[in-house]
Amino acid sequence: MSVDAGLGVESGGESSGAPAPNGQARLSLGTAAARNLATTTKSAPQMQGITSRWLLRILPWVQVSGGTYRVNRRLTYTVGDGRVTFIQTGSEVRVIPEELGELPVLRGYDDIDVLNALADRFVQREFTPGQVISEAGAAADHAYLVVHGKVNQIGTGKYGEQAVLGVLADGDHFGNQVLAQSDSTWDFTAKAATAVTLLGLPREAFQAVVDQSDSLREQIQRFLSGTQLAQNKHGEAAIHLASGHEGEPDLPGTFVDYEISPREYELSVAQTVLRVHSRVADLYNQPMNQVEHQLRLTIEALRERQEHELINNRDFGLLYNTDYSQRIHAHSGPPTPDDLDELISRRRNSQFLLAHPQTIAAFGRECNRRGLYPHSIDFHGNAVPSWRGLPFLPCNKIPINGGHTSSIIVLRLGEDNQGVIGLHQTGLPDEFEPGLSVRFMGINEKAIISYLVSAYYSAAVLVPDAIGILENVEVARAHS
Image (cartoon, helix red, strand yellow):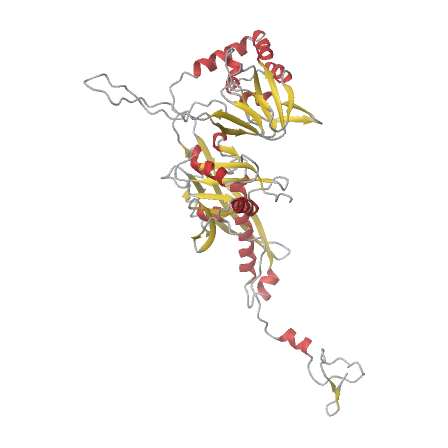
């Protein structure tokens, strides 16, 4: 350790006024103390949880002045194409009786005693990958509920080749015609793509319950008569037209029927109370405004929660409000180009794809395996991956279930496009951003200032095919 002989000051001293290690008093200010008084160059407060929030950026936001948005549609005849859920005790599975109302023939039927009797007659069956469950052209004698696994629907193409017509997975059902018609045959071959657990209801068991229940017989008759209602392929009440005629025939009369009870979306809210001590706001506001930065980070967190709710909320979230007819399953496991092509082709004017970043990476691996290299496109000044010209936008709010599977969402947007829209209300009291207000709540006896921060929002799907989902895609990297 060197000491300046002329000044008697130790080199590299780190404090002022304190004795030096050799007992001599310091004669100059140390660097540690000097740094406390210096003006440092500093950043604004940072936050790791801020994401790109692409969904909030691409949604067209519609002003909802009354707090509620009503979606009017043509009258649709509901045929009961929902998913069935189950309860599991160990390895044994039982269908929830009320869930049988998702089957077309039992839609709206609520006799719980009869539904319990039907649920008791389902038999659990296990199939291995590649095993045939039903054969096309054979007599259909069972109705099946898919508890777990994937089932390929295989048919014959135009030139005699076998083709996969569709994929059924957890909660799906097939063979429902067995319950209403005693002489039906299978239209396709059902083959297990993975290990599959099914619940099967034999035609004889169903008929035994029908013979003992007048209400169930009436329900079947209502179903058979209801299927004769004039409707288009989307289930909407038909508009009767004439074309290609000659002369002066009588033209059909028609009208466009509407849903009597259309769905209404009420604005949801995300709120928090921001608290700042008055001492901090008074004394520590230079060179950065403490209240301003506290509010900025609070709003960022609120917007993150808003996007999460728009994806995952059970009332209006996109994952839960996609029609079951617009949900498909990956044919193999990982998301492949073939899967995305099928997802996009099911609707007109698909505009955007949304997926978790890990899902996009899994799709990239599948493209690499096939020697395909999708182009990136410039979107809002960012280079983002694309497929078939559609931006493939990352959204970490789409969950990865159990660390293994996730979903890919395709969207068509806008009111004029009969798409998906965001809902908010502007012009709020103390509005800070569109649809977000910051209201002063006062100062309490502890001298703490409080601000109520509120964001109002929702989302609406104008017609079912405005959104589609590729479900249960595997995102985990295969072990090699």
